[in-house]
Amino acid sequence: MTLSSSLPLTHDATTAPALRDHRIPADGLCEGPRILRRLPDGVPGRPYEKFELVPQGPVIGAEIRGLDLSRPVPSAVRDELNRALLEWKVLFFRGQHLTPDAQRRFARHWGELETNPLLAPGDADDVVRFDKSPGTVPTFENVWHTDVTFRERPALGAVLQLREVPPVGGDTMWADMAAAYDNLPAGVRERIDGASAVHDFLPGFSRFYSPRQLAQFQEQFPPVEHPVVRRHPETGRRMLFVNTSFTTRIVGLDRPESDRLLRLLFQQAHVPEFQVRFRWQAGDVAFWDNRATQHYAVNDYAPHPRVAERVAIAGDRPFG
Image 1 (cartoon, rainbow, N blue to C red):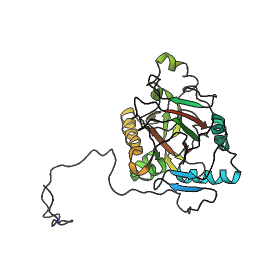
Image 2 (cartoon, rainbow, N blue to C red):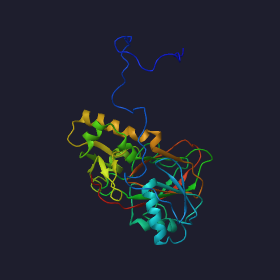
Image 3 (cartoon, rainbow, N blue to C red):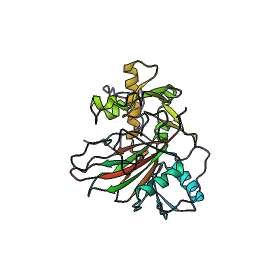
């Protein structure tokens, strides 16, 4: 059955027929137009002169062409790449095939590298190796998250290279958390502006390690509090800063109320208009702003191997 095209789009409330209750739960994703602004208000877009930039979506994701990351990056190129990172949140570089040393050298243009004893190392302590060959221990996939928010100073960003890709699948997705914040209902924004949340490594890593293994790191990584809405230290934009893997509760709310509000906030990363999806080829590099994004590694490629190496750049303490 289809609705007649002759039905009016408006009606007189005094003559409208009674309809059965058709409400949906208040917490969730709302349909309708999205606010999609890539730049802070009042900041004009400018062309790039040192490389070619190809947008992969309206608010997040751009491919950078014309650069060889194995070579030293001049300061003018670094500054323009940083502007691109702030504007597009994740940058893609095809066919780089960097050595671990070259990958680390590129990342160091943005700061000191951090180590993560919870993940398997590569050729150096500050290189993490994700080897998803059959029989290896699983790690973070099929969950939206922001890296290491359980630290007092979560990572500024990360540089990831795929060394071995499956024939089909194994994509990675990123979500723009500034857009996620912009599109929250005004009442929700009022509730979370100025609020803090607790972040803990245990929920995310308990999927992979035994309680005995996890206990070794409890003193090294105690729970920390971060603002629910983080202000970007370079752009000033407000961004939603909670994630499924590490955020356990909102300070000052009882557990049922905190759980309900966090469920609503966690869902915002799932909105396609805020996302970009990247199909990897061997040797490709992605560089993302960990302050402004969440990401999701799609686990749809078994039984084929997928091998990646990541270096993370140490960040600052989040503020609201």
